[in-house]
Image (cartoon, rainbow, N blue to C red; front, side, top):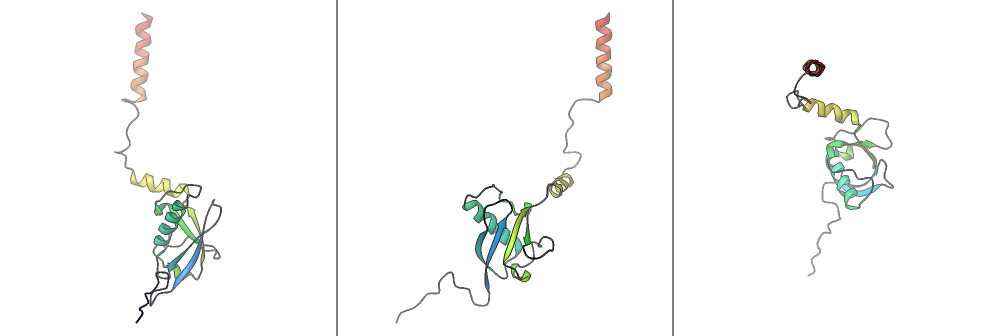
Length: 141
């Protein structure tokens, strides 16, 4: 008797798979790959970034998925939550964008505390002024 193995690209029992298309803002064309309907948005962003880098596309994006937002192409709503499932949105076309710089700067500023920011000089401007005036007085003598 001949035994047949299930092919890897066939869907597993109990879960639907979707062919999704992700357009990266500033890139030439979309990235297409197959995901499970129950896949979370954060994992889809990670897969898209890895595929993008593997293909050697430009512009270079990086690999930190926390710097990106995924939008549904045909819905006017905001960015998708990283914990939503990709199949819950009823769309197969998405857009991947970098987070705006203002959000990143605010997050970085919240992380930094005043103790981690060093001082530029070794004194205040008043002490510098007093030193420079004292030097002029000495040179005048």
